Every structure is written in C-alpha cells, then in structure tokens.
Length: 113
Length: 115
Image (cartoon, rainbow over all chains, first blue to last red; front, side):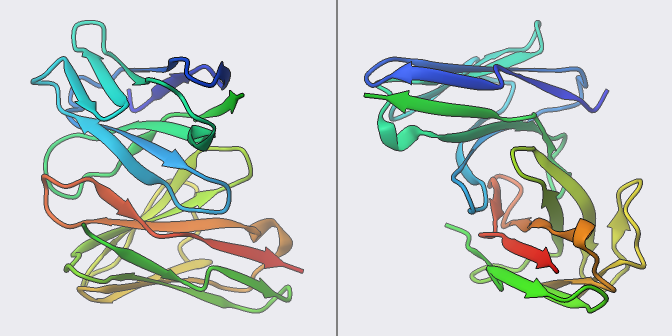
C-alpha cells in the first residue's frame, strides 16, 4: 500500500516537444504529491507539487495533472529543452507535518535537438 | 526558500574506518530530518527519520548500529557510517521541511566511496 509506481523508466523527447511522466499510487491516505528533478551527482530539487483538492497545477512549463478517482498523477513538461534532461521522481506522502515521502522509481528524461 | 546544506559532498575512506556526514538546515529549524541512500540509476531509499532530541527511527533492514544518526540540535543531523565496507559505497542524501505547507528540501548529497 506504500508503493508509488512510475513510468516510463526512460523517455526521449525532441526539443520543443511535450514530456509526460506518469505515476500511480495505492494508499488513499496520501495527500501530497511532489515531483523532483535530479541531475547527476546532485540532490533532488522540488519542481512542483499538488494536493488532491485540485486536479491540475501549472508552474511555468511544468504541469501536474491529478486524477483522484484513478489514483494517478502525471507531470507534463511543455516545450522541453535540453536543460530539462535529468531524472524525474514522483513521490507521495500523507498528512501535514513530517511524514516520510514514498518515491517512484524514477524516469530518465533525455531531450534531443 | 529553505536551504539544506550537506557536507562533505564526497569522501573516500578505507575499509573499516568510520565516516561522518553532516546535514544542516541553514535558515530554518528542523525537528525532523530524513536520511536517504541512492544507488546508481535507482530511486531514493529512506534509511531513517532523524528526530531532534530523541532516537532515530530506522526503516526495516537498515542496521542502526552501522548507520548512527544523531540529531543534537534543531539545525544539525549527522549520519555516521561505522566500520565502512565497499558495499556501503553509495550516494547519501538528507532532507528536511521548513513548514507543513512547504515541500521537502534535499541536501546536495554525499558520495561515499569505501576502498
């Protein structure tokens, strides 16, 4: 019940295209869903996060779509750029306070010219 | 935004020695910090939850005597890898959260290589 499943494992997108990464969760107690971007040799950096009271959140080129009934959420990167090439992790946690994050398995995104 | 500083960024040690990794919250107080381990091309694996002034909570399968965690102040948590062996070589990352409405901020990670 603590799993967060992420797909695809790797993704190649042409520059200017849309990158889409999907995650699914099982635990209905999860109520915080962040996406992290990680470059090699660095710690993850928070990109964008959503709570289940909204179905979509947009920040610049990054959008989270959230489907509570399907227990799925996805990250869309519009106008993908070579600098977006990184590993992306979805995660989930429950409640406010210091609840631990459960991470997805990661997606290695490569943007080609 | 909240900043978590981790030190050192990389360390090489001999097998059998101990290594200490520091994690500091620079502009906020963190009653709880988290320690993760990440192998190449894999996800982050939570090792333990560090609680200020009390014992850490370790995840199943993590040896508490090998990975000593101390959270002596509201801004500092340390992870000591005792009697390190080559299989302990990994990327160790800490994280903390400023307020419940904020996201978790991660340190820059520590690359440990045991030779």
